[in-house]
Amino acid sequence: MTFKSKLDAAWLDSGSMLMVGLDPDPERFPAELHGRKDAIFEFCREIVDSTAPYVCGFKPQIAYFSASGAEEQLEALCRHIKDKHPGLPLVLDAKRGDIGSTAEQYAREAYERYGADAVTVNPYMGHDSVAPYLEWKDRGIIVLCRTSNPGGSDLQFIEDRDGTPLYLRVASMVAEQWNQNGQCGLVVGATFPQEIAKVRERVADMPLLIPGIGAQGGSIPDTVQAGRDSRALGMMINSSRAVLYASNGSDWREAAAEAARATRDAIKAVA
Image (cartoon, rainbow, N blue to C red; front, side, top):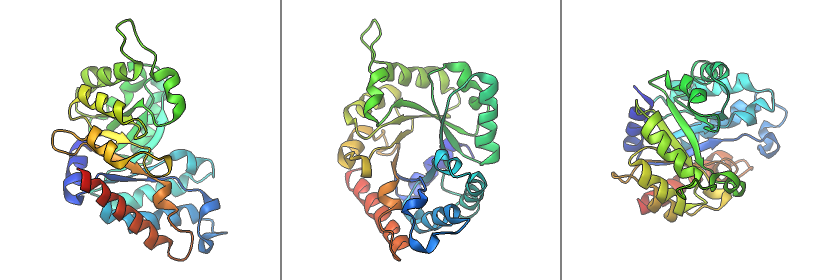
């Protein structure tokens, strides 16, 4: 099964376009996990199992694991997701971008070591830096396009001679040149719904990974209206902190599940 077919099935089977981002910060963990060597794995595993009924996939952010020297816990978490929730896509948020020979190793890291169905990449170095990922024809490549951070405009809004901003040039390039096997998606931030709509117009039904709701303040109605595809699907709307840290008390599992359910329902109410 390819990443795109798995994602299509997850949207339909789960009835959800919510993706939960796994950004584990040990300082915000509930007291019962303090001092445990496997705290990062245990926290994320419980979040995954509690929220799985309400999501279309999970997105572990590699920096939160590597900063704590917890790559083995990330491996264990990825295995758990694949074993216990095999219908839910696993997107490794790594934002890699380097020359071809190095990109080959990053692709192996994402797809072999962590078993990811897709990985986020940076397009700044051009096609040859992305080509090694495209060789894995059953896996996804999700390209940064219009990011949710305010500083993204520093480069992404630079216009060419035709007046086209860089982020739209990236969108067109990925859709028309890189997506020959239907592997690609784009990252477009919920904090910029007008740009989401412009990207959607350029790329038809290509999947969009949309961070920025929840803690970053993006509007769910504006996001869904701007980003839905011809089937009223097409989005992996990511929420991380608002779900993970809905509570740090003894009810943290239940609170995370309720936050995921409520977010899923808010998305469905618009879609």
